[in-house]
Length: 464
Ligand code: COA
Image (cartoon, rainbow, N blue to C red; front, side, top):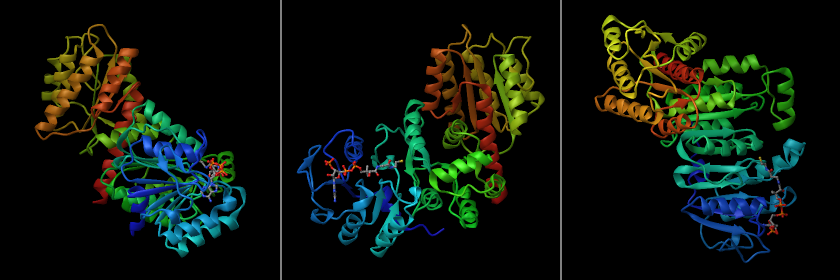
């Protein structure tokens, strides 16, 4: 992988110009500037607008060429008709990367202008993200250069999206769901930098643990490069892709949306399997897996133990384990005996381990501790149905404690949790997520997350 160091100017610029920074709240050029300031970007920000003296308290410049300092990156939000002159100015100024928000290029058949845009930028050695994008976020540097939601939560998941509106909407959704992101990259027309190159860059980014991609299709002829590149990226960190346009009708919709050739879905499917990319069916699944992979270690094997206080939840999780190819361990005798200590006589020490509705947080604590300790167990899924004898928050705290103790003793195994119930259960789930244990509202999602970890771990093991 030859990652262009110029991409540092996109993710970690020391200074940013907003060309087309507007004086009017609600306009794209105003909102980008506001997000940059309010999200706390520490570098220098230079609004550029020939009509304005000052915007949001910052001195405004008529052209980037009037800015007295060096500029690493320019976010461009002016109409397509006047863009080439501005790009030339950026080139003459020595700017390294352009984030081109502007629409009206190849996505509407204006291929020639897009080619001129890239050619002009290249002639000055500049790289382009876009055009037709909502911008870029890199949370480790407090940079939100988008007109999307402001308060992106920091974390280890990078999100690359070929769809603009969906990407902006999902930024909001990740805030609601408290999913921590390292980066959000809107790809748009991919006239220059494409999703492959961004993934390669993020593969070496220490702040990114998992790369997620919403993909509609690659440019023609990019298939081989995608496979070769992803093979290398997935050996460094997990990549999860939602590839839409699976059906024939969906593929036609993708073609008219981003102009990408969706290609045969089967080809994409085979390609992704070949290079260790985890293919999620939908956005929810993608972030479910990402949350787990960002916080959990690799699994040493496929032997999973399910610990529950409800038989029904256990059965559903068992079905899901079969569906996703997760092996349910038949607990060895010593482990069964250990489990039996923490359940009434009518419980079950087989897998799923049923602590019964009488289970209290301390019984869960002991059973989960035993599972962490036993070498035959590779991964753990804990299920909880709200009962009056087991307070969900207390349980969440116990689980965090058990895991911490295990890690302190040098034992780290993937764990996922499903908590079924009302408002207090939701709060407990959030507490688990905030403390590095992926928690979900139904058993199937907790098992699916463990399955993703196992699948990725086995792929890495085979590749080494
Ligand atoms: N340099 C810098 N600023 C300039 C300029 C120049 N050469 N020429 C004009 N401007 C200023 C304008 O005066 C205006 O500021 P003001 O609001 O204070 O008057 C500002 O730049 C923006 O220009 P304007 O002509 O008002 O454009 P706009 O804001 O209506 O639209 C885009 C610009 C880029 C937002 C629009 O063309 C566009 O492409 N919209 C779609 C964006 C999109 O959806 N992207 C994909 C998302 S997924």
